[in-house]
Length: 267
View 1 (cartoon, rainbow, N blue to C red):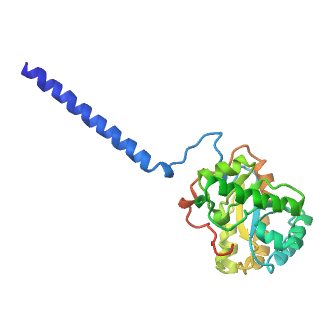
View 2: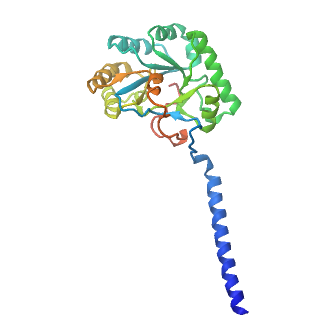
View 3: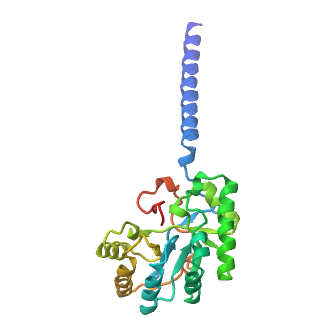
């Protein structure tokens, strides 16, 4: 009789340990749920690069304020005969600089959205995120005559909700694999070195044409020449995406990005 109770006690103790461990694991998953990336073929994701064996690369330029830098950058692209690039334009800037928007459009470059207010969309409600994206969509469509379907979030900030709202509005969220750090004005040589040493097939390169980025137009000729000498062909982001059905690298919450986030103060 005693042995029966001893045996049952051990089983009960084991069950308690297992149950406690299961509760602990469930608690960890609950607490960390915001940091877990759920992958599925249907879940919206951000695109950092496109897997391809072809030496294709997309130069992208963000603009949210100023009028001194776009002209020189467009001139470099023209002089170097780079007829494929993608510009992400904020709608307030676009409304106050329609002539520059027209110059970018007339040059044949792809135009994507850089949103409306320059704030972190992950801090907004779903409805506010939708308002920001649709407001910019309306402005850019009116100015260019074409509806944009690519968006780079202000500050490169997003989370799963932002991805879902953007996808529901027909947008692909575009990030980057290579950050030139031109927005830090780290020096022409350093900007050139960062881009040309990190470039790879299917890469999306982050550059800026806002006035705070004072060295981009000086580094750009060397970047173009160097990449061409490596055998790269310049394409738009849309053309790059069309090379593969895959949606680029893994989605990461923007809070997990380190370098590569723009300065909130005017990029």
